[in-house]
Length: 209
Image (cartoon, rainbow, N blue to C red):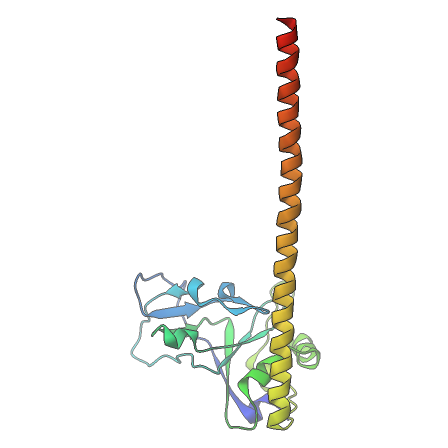
């Protein structure tokens, strides 16, 4: 089936011009810079701002899926409950589409995972427009091919995906730690060489005296 059959797709908030930073605002704007495909949303980096107009904004909700409409990869990320716990409200920038499930046939976590997989990504690539700054239209996203297995299978896929993501982050952390250790060893070697050189120079000067 198509994505539009299981989810409602809307555009991000229609900001006019740049997003203005408003200190101490309980409203934040989520932009492309605040999202990483593997790590998800960094709420701390979102810009606090104020919204103009009388129309009620399309506030992000836990379980929403954000799909990058522009860029080299149309990745999808799941909105978790972190922001709600901080008692703040958030809107997505126009560079995102907001995908919100219509029923209980599909779990948001599974749907976010599926949109990042090769069949959907290939669909986005084929429907992308532009040369340098590629983008996809809402109709392309709405027509994305969706497979809906039983709920228990969806839960299993989410669990497996989460475990693999945790393993990847752990491996990256171990790699960073290994690089720090190698750097520390190299710096220590050069430090010892410098001390040795200074000691040799001091002995020569003493001998001349």
